[in-house]
Amino acid sequence: MAVQPLKDQNIAVIGGGLGGLCAALCFARRGASVTVYEQAPSFEEVGAGIQVASNGLRVLRALGLDPSSAFQGEGTTLHDHLGRRVAVLPNSSSREVRLFHRPELLGLLEAGCQDAGVRLELGAKITPEDAPEADLFVAADGVKSAFRAHVAPDLAAPEFSGQAAWRALVRPPKPITRGGVSVYMGPGAHVVVYPIQQGELINVVVGEDTAERAAEGWQQEVSQADMAARLSAFGGPVGELIGRAEKVHLWGLFNHKLPPRWSEGNVVLLGDAAHAMLPYMAQGACMAFEDAWALAASWEKYDDPDAALGAYESLRVPRVARVMKAVRANATRFHHSNAVARVIGHTGLRAVSTLAPGLIARQFDWLYNYDVTKV
Ligand SMILES: Cc1cc2nc3c(=O)[nH]c(=O)nc-3n(C[C@H](O)[C@H](O)[C@H](O)COP(=O)(O)OP(=O)(O)OC[C@H]3O[C@@H](n4cnc5c(N)ncnc54)[C@H](O)[C@@H]3O)c2cc1C
Image 1 (cartoon, rainbow, N blue to C red):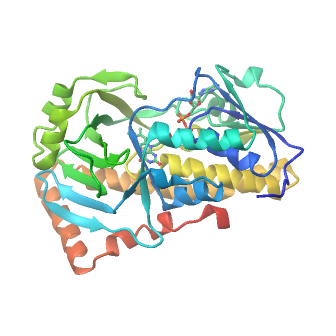
Image 2 (cartoon, rainbow, N blue to C red):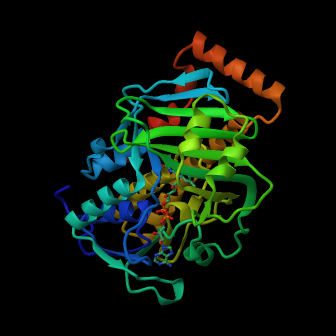
């Protein structure tokens, strides 16, 4: 992007996570003067995997970033909890997924920001009361956003969903050279497995129904034995993988309502600050990347800030709401606790996958084929 349509604009981005750094780069590539304020002493992501699907990859590539160092996933395969194949969701020319180690993805965005001249202020915790001067504040301060309460003070507090996510990394006996995402669907839980870091590591994420309320965030380390006990019904490769997991962390999953508005004055919400969602479509960060592009494009298009922020919200709310609806459907599909419902559900999926290969995957074309950089 050689043109500098936003060269007179000062943009402050609060939060240097995946959404904040992507937003910073979207504005900087349009010529804006951008500062990212991150409360942590360094840019940090947890040592876990993250899937970035085609709709998110389009944003990264449009920003001049090259995701090819990440593991190229070969589609998604659904299994039952004993490891028997239920359905295959293949990749296609417009559907791709890259499997990143999170620090690798954050590093890619950070390098892009450095290259584009973004100022990066670390150890800088900003509150709505002491925000520095800027034309626009992009609040990308994550799931526990302080700016969300400023923008939408009447928003109901998030509620514990009755589910938790466990994550662990496992080192395979030898590096994996080919593969994709495997999902194992069992009673009250599902397990997602995929290779990262040139196949040197396997990322394992478990979504589990639980009455035990856990905190929202990865701070809680739990024992490998606990995770193994909870997944004792799982056979196939899952049991073996869990047995080799070293550190296990737990994240309590909360239902967040979408705020009735995404901006107040010159403060606008982006990423998890606007729409934290359950991880069952692996789309939270992809939605943040789409937000980032859409916001910078609207800010460039409209002279009037209210019109720009209104256009951003109008574009993003229906899209994010549709993804959140698909997430809820997956929560049911993946976690049939009732054995009869599970067998019926899996039999149906297996039949459709066999009789009409590609049909299940095509149901999500609206999600993966979307290109926010062309809207
Ligand atoms: C189990 C699990 C699996 C997931 N898997 C996927 C996946 O495969 N694919 C996918 O697309 N998404 C996935 N997600 C979702 C994804 O991780 C999030 O949507 C994404 O990381 C959100 O990025 P963010 O920048 O909005 O927020 P965050 O990453 O939380 O970043 C917020 C940043 O703001 C900083 N901050 C907070 N307050 C302040 C302040 N007052 N001042 C300054 N800085 C501040 C924080 O320190 C932090 O660095 C998953 C989520 C979970 C829980």
